[in-house]
Image (tube, rainbow, N blue to C red; front, side, top):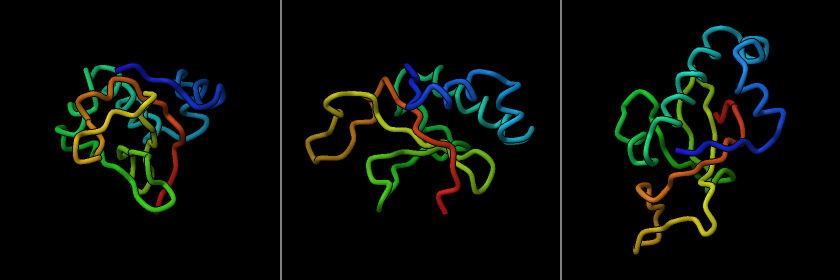
Length: 111
């Protein structure tokens, strides 16, 4: 998948191990690096959904439209499909197989 970042600051943090360690500490930085590699290696979002550890899922409420994968509890890597228009199935749900580009929006505790 193609991975974009919502801001240059977020891209800088996620592109440098030194910056990741400085911003998040060693355990979260390792998990973030792992999740980014998994996302970049996947052909589409449905491949991530099948892998148990990341727990890729859509969010609801004030984060509707965003998806997340687990980092270290309770932190998650939040992203959105980077398609215009966003691919949807006939029932109106997100077509995970058509999502081949994402935009990382935040690393946060959503609880």
